[in-house]
Amino acid sequence: MASNAATRGFSLLEVLVVVALIAAASVLAVGVLGGGIERIQLRSSAKEIAANLRYTRAHALATGVPQEFAIDPAAHSWRAPGGRSGSIPEKLEILFTGAREVQPREGEGAIVFFDDGASTGGRVRLEAGGAGWNVDVAWLTGEVRLHRAERTP
Image (tube, rainbow, N blue to C red; front, side, top):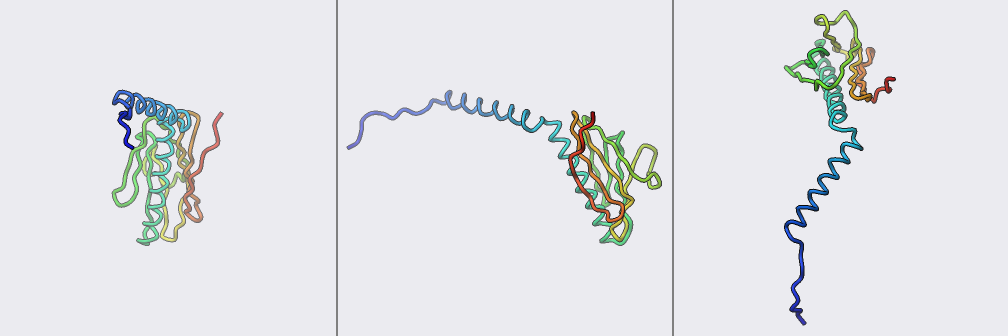
């Protein structure tokens, strides 16, 4: 038997208030759990640099010609073969350690990958708000590793 009573739903205003509360809670959760936008940029930039170092190594292996990945900490930029280049957010601190002999210019660092996969080795360290990521390149094998950096005092 059918009921004549109308079923009550939610008003548009009630739905919008609930959606706004969920959105506000999500923004707060990302800020607290993820460490904020700065830490997201930190990890994203470290992954991008690691990926382009791997690309540079693969390019050297494929072409049989040494290839260079260059980074300019002052300009917050990097260059890789094939016209690849990118920038690093200004909020991040960049520390580069590598062979002085392959330094393209004063204040700029480089890691050269050879046709057998080996490299000159080095480290790109990105830091923000006490957190950091290291992108390490082994000189003998050219292996690129990405890992959290030890906290600095």
